[in-house]
Image 1: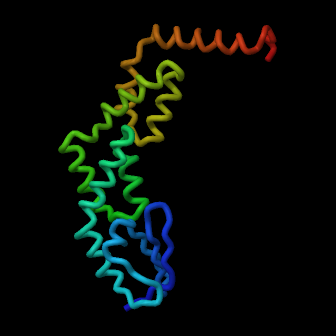
Image 2: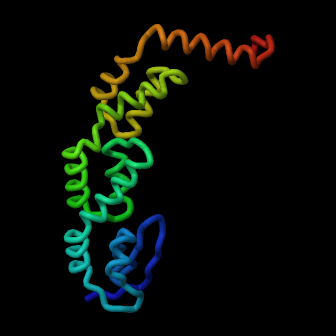
Image 3: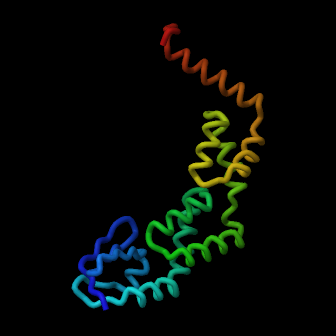
Length: 173
């Protein structure tokens, strides 16, 4: 049996430093349910089993709270849950549940994102933003194809006029 050397709480997680050199990241909601203190004996496998058994409702609640704040892609939800320490199996279950309840839809997310950004940015930048958020190329291209060429051109002309208005005739700039 191992021993806990130190417990640090940061960004929704408790990080348990064990005497074996291992670090175990535990979501704070689970840590509050089963706290572990420095200097006490610790069974890491038993704690991992506890996280697998009890993690799903906590992770689902966290994912729904994230989606309530703003629209997110699957990868954004997955990354946030894994970062705070939920096991991959639990995260996979949560993602499947969110899809089943139609709370998560990357294609719809990509379309909404593209439409909301189209008046300020071009297709290339929007495509890169979608890629950063974990949207695959085909889904991003489908969302970008919905943007009107005429609207994109009108927005580019408007933004160029706005820029030229700030230069006060200094065209070399």
